[in-house]
Length: 81
Length: 311
Image (cartoon, rainbow over all chains, first blue to last red; front, side, top):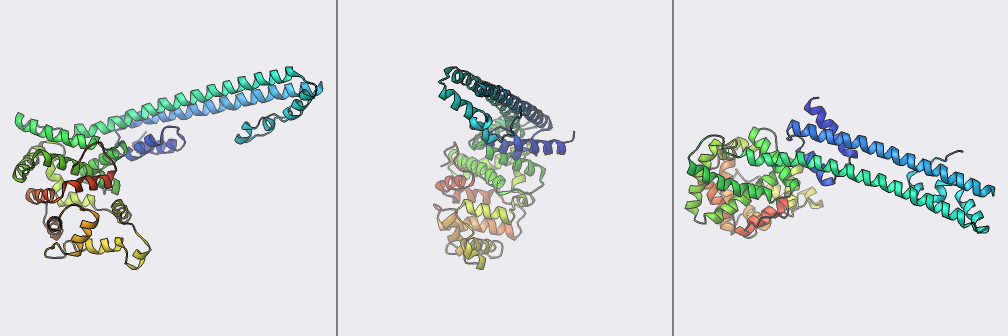
C-alpha cells in the first residue's frame, strides 16, 4: 500500500473515529511528516477501531431486538389475561 | 410478531419500543397485577445492564485507539529533538555549547501545546527540504520557537557583543547538524515563509488587525497594513516617525521604542532590496531592538500560552 493511499484511508477513518478531537487534529496536522512505519500503525489501529465499533453497534441492535421481542411477548400475555 | 421500525431517538421511549406496553400497563394496573410490573422491571434492568456493557466496550476500544494514535504522534514529535543533533564530530567544547543552546530550543518547542508542536514539525520538514510554503500556523509556531529560544539566549548573554559571539559560534557549529543555522538566514529559504492572502489575514488577525467592511474601500487597518508593508524595500530608509514604524509600534512591538522599531524595519528593508542574507550583526541588532515584553506578547499572539516564561 503506497503512502498516499494510507493517508487517504486514515483521513476517511478519522471522520467516524471516536478518538479525541485533539488526536484527530494532531494526526491531520502531522499526516504528511509521520514516518511510514508509524503511519501504518495508526492505520491499523483505526481500522481495528472501525471494525470493533461496527461489531458493537450490531451487538447493541441485537440486544434491543431481543428485549423488544421479550417485552412484546410479555405484554401480549398480559393483554390476553 | 411484527417488529416496528424504530429510529434511534425512539429507544428512550419504552412505549414506542414496545407498542403493547401501554395497554398492558393499563390492564395490569386495573387488575393490580404486581407480578407484571416486577417482570417488566427485570427486563428493563437487564436490558440497561447489557447496553451499559456495550457502552463500556466501546469506551475501551476508543481508549485503545487513542493510545495507539498518541504513540505515533509522540514518536514523530520526538524526531525534532533527534533531527537537530550534530551528525559530525566537532570539538567537545563546541558540542557541549551547541547542546546547551539546542536544549533551550527543544525546551521552547516543548513549551507549546501539541498542536503547535505539530505545526512546527511540518515547518521544520519544509525548511529542511527547502521546499513548499508555510501556512500561518506553521510560520507562527516556527517564529514562536525562534523568539522563545532567542529570548532565553539573550538572558544568558545580556551583553550584545557576547550574544553576537555566541550566535556566530552556533552558526558555525550548526553546519554539522541536519539543519545548519545559515539555512534560515538564506533569502531563498525565507521565501518559504511568504504567506498567501488568506494566511496573511490570519496573521494580522493574531495581532488584532481584522479585515472589516472599511477594508472594502481601503480604509481599514488591514488595508493600511498592506499598504505600509509594501513600502518595505521601496524606501532608502525608515525613521521613527514614519507611518510603518508607528503601525508596528501599535500592533506588534508595543513596548519597544520607535527608534528600535525603525532599526528593525531598516534591516528588513535592506533584505527586501536585495541583500542575499541577513547578517549575524543585523540579526543581533534586531534581537536587541525588541523589548523583552514584546517577545512574550508576540509569542502569545502567535501560539497562545506556553509553559515557558519568555521575558
